Amino acid sequence: MLSNFLNNPISSQTQTSAKQEQFLRVHLVPDTNIILSINQITEVLNIPVEKIVPIPQMPAWTMGVYNWRGEVLWMVDLGHLVGLTPWHKQRYASSNYRAIVIHHGDRKLNENAGEKLGLIVHQVEDLEWCNPDQIQSPPAASVTPELVPFLRGYWLKTNGEILIVIDAETIMAAMPKL
Image (cartoon, rainbow, N blue to C red; front, top):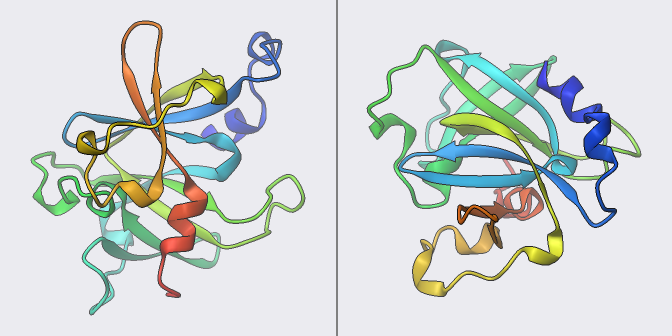
């Protein structure tokens, strides 16, 4: 399970500079790659579509609730939240959702600390090591207005690839008290 991988990074990678931080890379439709600090992630899930129960009269980006470990976990369409193509308008047919469980609070102090939220994404890709000092502010015209409140910046990899860095804490803070 990826949660075990997140808690036990590969030993060769732990020898990297103290300034390095590990991020989980995910893909949103269309063609948007984002990274989230693994320090803000509790678990990655594969959820059957029928297991998310829609709740009426919620914001359009709220997909519903899911029974996660006996708790009610609100599920949010991350792409829709940040101004991209909503999940229900994507051409990809799948019987499962990929979800990232993020948390508010310090996981190192208490695994059950803080609130949790599920983010539905198109694809979970890989772990990336990034020096936080290399995260830059993007030009205002290059991002959707919906993304701005959650944006930590962007990281330009040595191969020229641009990854958008978002902050799970700001996503949690922006959620209505569901």
